Amino acid sequence: MTQGYSRKRGLSLLLRTMHLVSFGILLGGHTFAIDADRLLPALYLTIASGVGLMTLEISTIGPHWLFMGKGAAVLVKLLILLAVPYTWDYRLPFFLLVVAIASVSSHMPGRYRHYSILQDRIVQIGEGLSIASAREDARPTTSPSSVE
Image 1 (cartoon, helix red, strand yellow):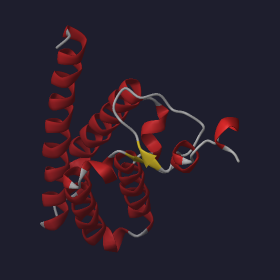
Image 2 (cartoon, helix red, strand yellow):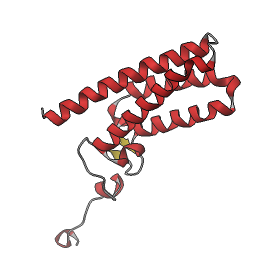
Image 3 (cartoon, one colour):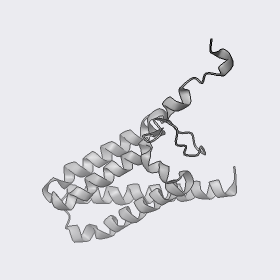
């Protein structure tokens, strides 16, 4: 295990813990109707830790992470959260939906988490982004000697 990987892993654990705690405070605060101004520090910490987690993933995997199952789940959660200021009365169901998406996407099988929407296949860690889709990769090639 390299020192760089160990450092990124530690930073990921720290950011994820901060993210879960701060979002938990937000969810609980809105559940029990705590004044929104009192929840601002938790909101800012949730945003900062989320940006940190996304930055870490993109710096490790590349921008292609956004088009993998796990990145797409994060984008869906962000879209839901961006709707909250415009649908304030429905914020609690939206927050609960975000928790449900987070739980399912964090525990779904790797074939979905690592599935690339762009490549139409599972992308392994450390594998570069290629233009060819899985269908093109899987298509048998015909050599001139095999054609009758």
